Length: 286
Image 1 (cartoon, rainbow, N blue to C red):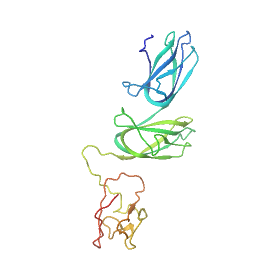
Image 2: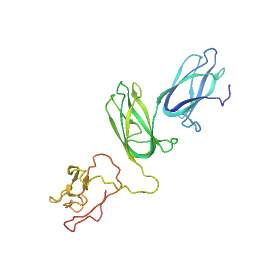
Image 3: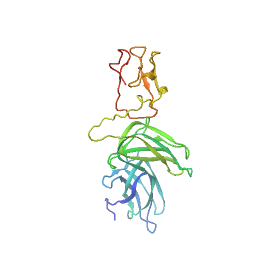
Image 4: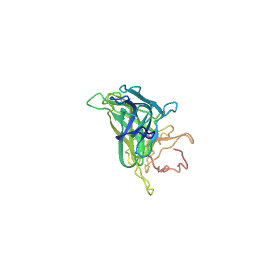
Protein backbone atom coordinates (compact mmCIF):
# COMPACT_ATOMS: atom_id res chain seq x y z
CA UNK A 1 0.00 0.00 0.00
CA UNK A 2 0.98 3.66 0.01
CA UNK A 3 -1.08 5.11 2.86
CA UNK A 4 0.56 7.49 5.34
CA UNK A 5 -0.63 5.12 8.08
CA UNK A 6 1.36 2.15 6.77
CA UNK A 7 4.05 0.65 8.98
CA UNK A 8 6.18 -2.47 9.32
CA UNK A 9 6.09 -3.95 12.84
CA UNK A 10 8.66 -6.31 14.37
CA UNK A 11 7.99 -8.22 17.60
CA UNK A 12 11.38 -9.13 19.10
CA UNK A 13 9.71 -11.55 21.52
CA UNK A 14 11.32 -10.04 24.63
CA UNK A 15 12.65 -6.55 25.44
CA UNK A 16 15.93 -5.73 23.70
CA UNK A 17 18.25 -2.75 23.57
CA UNK A 18 17.91 -1.48 19.98
CA UNK A 19 20.84 0.64 18.80
CA UNK A 20 20.62 0.57 15.00
CA UNK A 21 18.57 -0.23 11.89
CA UNK A 22 19.55 -1.15 8.31
CA UNK A 23 17.28 -0.88 5.26
CA UNK A 24 17.14 -1.96 1.59
CA UNK A 25 14.56 -1.58 -1.14
CA UNK A 26 12.70 -4.11 -3.32
CA UNK A 27 15.28 -6.13 -5.30
CA UNK A 28 13.10 -6.93 -8.40
CA UNK A 29 11.74 -3.39 -8.93
CA UNK A 30 12.64 0.27 -8.43
CA UNK A 31 10.73 0.57 -5.18
CA UNK A 32 12.29 1.72 -1.90
CA UNK A 33 11.74 3.86 1.16
CA UNK A 34 13.57 7.21 1.10
CA UNK A 35 12.79 8.30 4.67
CA UNK A 36 10.91 6.90 7.64
CA UNK A 37 9.94 7.38 11.25
CA UNK A 38 10.65 4.88 13.99
CA UNK A 39 8.36 4.05 16.93
CA UNK A 40 8.90 1.55 19.72
CA UNK A 41 7.06 -0.04 22.64
CA UNK A 42 7.62 -2.49 25.49
CA UNK A 43 3.98 -3.60 25.79
CA UNK A 44 2.63 -3.39 22.22
CA UNK A 45 0.10 -0.73 23.26
CA UNK A 46 1.93 2.51 24.02
CA UNK A 47 4.43 3.63 21.37
CA UNK A 48 7.02 6.41 21.44
CA UNK A 49 8.70 8.14 18.50
CA UNK A 50 12.47 7.95 18.25
CA UNK A 51 14.15 11.37 17.95
CA UNK A 52 17.73 12.24 17.10
CA UNK A 53 19.94 14.74 18.94
CA UNK A 54 18.24 17.69 17.20
CA UNK A 55 14.76 16.37 17.97
CA UNK A 56 14.06 15.16 14.42
CA UNK A 57 11.84 12.11 14.02
CA UNK A 58 12.62 11.39 10.35
CA UNK A 59 15.47 9.01 9.44
CA UNK A 60 16.91 8.76 5.92
CA UNK A 61 16.88 5.42 4.13
CA UNK A 62 17.62 4.35 0.55
CA UNK A 63 18.34 5.86 -2.86
CA UNK A 64 18.21 2.61 -4.86
CA UNK A 65 16.73 -0.89 -4.67
CA UNK A 66 19.71 -2.87 -3.32
CA UNK A 67 21.98 -0.51 -1.41
CA UNK A 68 22.06 -0.97 2.36
CA UNK A 69 21.75 2.12 4.56
CA UNK A 70 22.66 1.80 8.25
CA UNK A 71 21.27 4.18 10.84
CA UNK A 72 22.94 4.17 14.25
CA UNK A 73 20.47 5.48 16.82
CA UNK A 74 21.59 8.55 18.73
CA UNK A 75 20.42 6.95 21.97
CA UNK A 76 19.83 3.24 22.38
CA UNK A 77 16.26 2.37 23.31
CA UNK A 78 14.58 -0.53 25.07
CA UNK A 79 11.77 -2.16 23.14
CA UNK A 80 10.03 -5.40 22.36
CA UNK A 81 7.96 -3.96 19.50
CA UNK A 82 9.41 -1.75 16.75
CA UNK A 83 7.48 -0.04 13.95
CA UNK A 84 8.97 1.54 10.81
CA UNK A 85 6.70 4.20 9.26
CA UNK A 86 7.66 5.19 5.67
CA UNK A 87 7.29 8.95 5.09
CA UNK A 88 8.68 9.25 1.53
CA UNK A 89 9.42 6.54 -1.02
CA UNK A 90 10.18 5.70 -4.64
CA UNK A 91 7.40 3.86 -6.47
CA UNK A 92 5.94 2.03 -3.48
CA UNK A 93 7.04 1.84 0.20
CA UNK A 94 8.92 -1.47 -0.15
CA UNK A 95 11.59 -2.40 2.36
CA UNK A 96 13.95 -5.09 3.60
CA UNK A 97 15.65 -4.48 6.91
CA UNK A 98 17.50 -5.53 10.04
CA UNK A 99 17.60 -4.31 13.64
CA UNK A 100 20.77 -4.24 15.74
CA UNK A 101 21.19 -4.41 19.48
CA UNK A 102 21.42 -6.76 22.44
CA UNK A 103 18.97 -8.72 24.53
CA UNK A 104 18.27 -7.60 28.08
CA UNK A 105 18.35 -9.71 31.24
CA UNK A 106 15.22 -9.53 33.40
CA UNK A 107 15.17 -11.00 36.91
CA UNK A 108 11.85 -11.66 38.67
CA UNK A 109 12.58 -11.63 42.41
CA UNK A 110 9.14 -13.10 43.16
CA UNK A 111 8.12 -10.23 45.43
CA UNK A 112 9.20 -6.68 46.20
CA UNK A 113 12.73 -6.58 47.60
CA UNK A 114 15.26 -3.91 48.48
CA UNK A 115 18.21 -4.20 46.07
CA UNK A 116 21.48 -2.60 47.21
CA UNK A 117 24.11 -4.01 44.86
CA UNK A 118 25.02 -6.09 41.81
CA UNK A 119 27.96 -8.39 41.05
CA UNK A 120 28.89 -9.48 37.53
CA UNK A 121 31.39 -11.61 35.67
CA UNK A 122 31.66 -12.88 32.11
CA UNK A 123 31.48 -16.16 30.19
CA UNK A 124 33.88 -18.61 31.84
CA UNK A 125 34.43 -20.60 28.64
CA UNK A 126 35.07 -17.77 26.14
CA UNK A 127 36.33 -14.19 25.99
CA UNK A 128 32.84 -12.70 26.16
CA UNK A 129 31.84 -10.23 28.87
CA UNK A 130 29.86 -7.06 29.48
CA UNK A 131 31.92 -3.90 30.03
CA UNK A 132 29.12 -1.46 30.87
CA UNK A 133 25.42 -1.77 31.56
CA UNK A 134 22.34 0.05 32.74
CA UNK A 135 19.88 -1.14 35.38
CA UNK A 136 16.12 -0.60 35.28
CA UNK A 137 13.61 -1.70 37.89
CA UNK A 138 9.86 -2.18 38.00
CA UNK A 139 7.06 -3.18 40.35
CA UNK A 140 4.74 -4.53 37.63
CA UNK A 141 7.00 -5.52 34.67
CA UNK A 142 5.39 -2.69 32.64
CA UNK A 143 6.61 0.66 33.95
CA UNK A 144 10.41 0.71 34.16
CA UNK A 145 12.67 3.24 35.90
CA UNK A 146 16.42 3.75 35.53
CA UNK A 147 18.73 3.18 38.46
CA UNK A 148 21.59 5.56 39.26
CA UNK A 149 25.09 4.78 40.42
CA UNK A 150 27.02 7.43 42.31
CA UNK A 151 28.08 9.19 39.11
CA UNK A 152 25.85 8.18 36.20
CA UNK A 153 23.21 5.82 34.89
CA UNK A 154 25.90 3.59 33.33
CA UNK A 155 27.56 1.02 35.60
CA UNK A 156 30.98 -0.44 34.87
CA UNK A 157 31.27 -4.22 34.70
CA UNK A 158 34.06 -6.54 33.65
CA UNK A 159 37.45 -6.46 31.92
CA UNK A 160 37.93 -10.23 31.69
CA UNK A 161 35.88 -13.44 31.68
CA UNK A 162 36.18 -14.53 35.35
CA UNK A 163 36.86 -11.46 37.48
CA UNK A 164 33.93 -10.42 39.69
CA UNK A 165 33.00 -6.72 39.77
CA UNK A 166 30.72 -5.48 42.55
CA UNK A 167 28.63 -2.33 42.12
CA UNK A 168 27.02 -0.79 45.20
CA UNK A 169 23.98 1.22 44.11
CA UNK A 170 24.13 4.91 44.98
CA UNK A 171 20.55 4.66 46.22
CA UNK A 172 18.96 1.33 47.08
CA UNK A 173 15.87 0.46 45.04
CA UNK A 174 12.69 -1.40 45.91
CA UNK A 175 11.41 -3.60 43.09
CA UNK A 176 10.17 -7.02 42.10
CA UNK A 177 11.69 -6.91 38.60
CA UNK A 178 15.26 -5.89 37.80
CA UNK A 179 16.47 -5.53 34.21
CA UNK A 180 20.13 -5.36 33.14
CA UNK A 181 20.87 -3.73 29.78
CA UNK A 182 24.41 -4.30 28.42
CA UNK A 183 25.62 -1.17 26.61
CA UNK A 184 29.20 -2.17 25.71
CA UNK A 185 30.78 -5.61 25.72
CA UNK A 186 33.71 -7.75 24.59
CA UNK A 187 32.83 -10.33 21.94
CA UNK A 188 29.21 -11.01 22.89
CA UNK A 189 27.04 -9.69 25.72
CA UNK A 190 27.55 -12.63 28.10
CA UNK A 191 27.10 -12.27 31.83
CA UNK A 192 26.84 -14.15 35.10
CA UNK A 193 25.65 -12.18 38.10
CA UNK A 194 24.08 -11.79 41.51
CA UNK A 195 21.80 -9.22 43.13
CA UNK A 196 22.25 -8.17 46.75
CA UNK A 197 19.67 -6.81 49.16
CA UNK A 198 16.96 -7.74 51.62
CA UNK A 199 13.34 -8.81 51.46
CA UNK A 200 10.96 -5.88 51.76
CA UNK A 201 8.15 -6.00 54.31
CA UNK A 202 4.81 -5.06 52.74
CA UNK A 203 1.32 -4.67 54.09
CA UNK A 204 0.84 -4.02 57.81
CA UNK A 205 4.04 -2.77 59.42
CA UNK A 206 5.97 -5.44 61.30
CA UNK A 207 9.10 -4.29 63.15
CA UNK A 208 12.35 -6.01 62.21
CA UNK A 209 13.92 -7.11 65.49
CA UNK A 210 16.74 -9.51 64.50
CA UNK A 211 19.96 -8.26 66.19
CA UNK A 212 23.17 -7.94 64.16
CA UNK A 213 25.37 -9.28 66.95
CA UNK A 214 26.66 -6.68 69.41
CA UNK A 215 24.96 -8.37 72.36
CA UNK A 216 25.97 -11.95 71.51
CA UNK A 217 29.51 -11.08 70.31
CA UNK A 218 28.86 -12.09 66.69
CA UNK A 219 30.40 -8.72 65.86
CA UNK A 220 34.00 -8.98 67.18
CA UNK A 221 35.74 -6.35 69.30
CA UNK A 222 37.91 -5.12 66.43
CA UNK A 223 34.78 -4.03 64.52
CA UNK A 224 33.73 -1.67 67.33
CA UNK A 225 35.70 1.57 67.59
CA UNK A 226 35.51 5.13 68.88
CA UNK A 227 37.32 8.44 68.46
CA UNK A 228 37.13 9.03 72.23
CA UNK A 229 37.10 6.37 74.97
CA UNK A 230 37.96 6.16 78.65
CA UNK A 231 40.72 3.59 79.18
CA UNK A 232 38.48 1.61 81.52
CA UNK A 233 35.47 1.85 79.19
CA UNK A 234 36.69 1.10 75.63
CA UNK A 235 34.43 0.88 72.58
CA UNK A 236 34.38 -2.93 72.77
CA UNK A 237 32.47 -2.64 76.06
CA UNK A 238 29.54 -0.95 74.33
CA UNK A 239 27.46 -4.11 74.03
CA UNK A 240 23.82 -4.42 75.11
CA UNK A 241 23.48 -6.14 78.53
CA UNK A 242 27.27 -6.10 78.95
CA UNK A 243 28.93 -5.88 82.38
CA UNK A 244 30.32 -2.43 81.57
CA UNK A 245 29.85 0.18 78.82
CA UNK A 246 31.65 2.47 76.40
CA UNK A 247 32.23 5.94 77.83
CA UNK A 248 33.51 8.92 75.87
CA UNK A 249 36.20 11.13 77.35
CA UNK A 250 34.54 14.20 75.85
CA UNK A 251 30.94 15.25 76.31
CA UNK A 252 30.09 16.30 72.76
CA UNK A 253 32.47 15.06 70.03
CA UNK A 254 32.83 11.37 70.96
CA UNK A 255 31.27 8.71 68.76
CA UNK A 256 30.87 4.94 68.78
CA UNK A 257 31.35 3.20 65.42
CA UNK A 258 30.21 -0.32 64.50
CA UNK A 259 31.46 -2.09 61.36
CA UNK A 260 28.71 -4.53 60.32
CA UNK A 261 31.07 -6.31 57.92
CA UNK A 262 28.88 -5.76 54.86
CA UNK A 263 25.98 -3.58 53.73
CA UNK A 264 22.83 -4.23 55.76
CA UNK A 265 19.45 -2.58 56.14
CA UNK A 266 19.26 -1.11 59.65
CA UNK A 267 15.74 -0.74 61.04
CA UNK A 268 16.31 0.01 64.71
CA UNK A 269 18.70 0.66 67.60
CA UNK A 270 18.56 -0.32 71.29
CA UNK A 271 20.65 1.46 73.95
CA UNK A 272 21.47 1.19 77.67
CA UNK A 273 23.55 3.26 80.07
CA UNK A 274 26.55 2.34 82.23
CA UNK A 275 25.52 -0.54 84.52
CA UNK A 276 28.07 0.45 87.19
CA UNK A 277 27.38 4.20 87.40
CA UNK A 278 24.65 6.75 86.79
CA UNK A 279 25.96 7.63 83.34
CA UNK A 280 23.85 7.31 80.20
CA UNK A 281 23.10 9.03 76.91
CA UNK A 282 19.80 10.92 76.75
CA UNK A 283 19.97 11.92 73.04
CA UNK A 284 22.17 10.98 70.08
CA UNK A 285 22.59 11.30 66.33
CA UNK A 286 23.24 8.48 63.85
